[in-house]
Image (cartoon, rainbow, N blue to C red; front, top):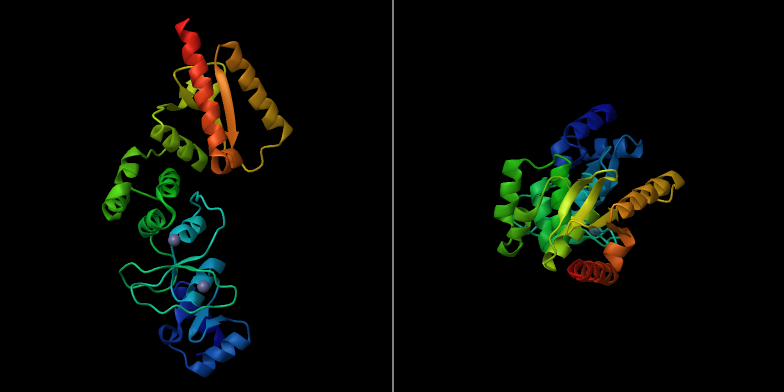
Length: 278
Ligand SMILES: [Zn+2]
Ligand SMILES: [Zn+2]
């Protein structure tokens, strides 16, 4: 088998495969790797054109899983320090590699190489990173059209019982992961809110509490553009003119400084509620 045929075969196998699957002799594979036609991931495992995280998961011995799989699929994932999560199956062997800091998953099934199905990745995420992270990723995946009805039911069924209510609470229209987090956290505080509400003259706001408090959550990474800032100011001015209060939070506040966000919302709501009694 020549190098071009080996490369074709590797591509057809999804970009990462064991020597045995490729069906070429050890010397042919070595020659193809020496020529740069394919990449040797580790002894007996070769890659071509695979996503770098998929290749690193294969180097570790399994499939890209959990938060790392969701990230590659474009799903919003709450993570302080993104790590490589790898599914090895119940008894697959781990292969430490340079700069290895992999988080290993060992649920049942036959793992190979590639990316685990999204349902499995979401179930991993709940157990590995907790309910909040799961909830935001689940809503993000749903919004992206990556979860149909059967998938959502399967996620619910496979989750530990303590997380199932999160599936029931989820919606397909959250604009960002931050919005999902805020809705979940406020719900736990007993504050119920309307999402994506059209306020005449202002536009669609992220949240409306008590019909008068607008909460906007800015999930955009680059929000310091002057024109965007001006737009927000116009919205806030119009909202104020109509008797609304507006609170704005960004990623850093919601994720790293939640107590401050919570105090701001609680104090504003108390003040508004007391004022409405007068
Ligand atoms: Zn994980
Ligand atoms: Zn590793």
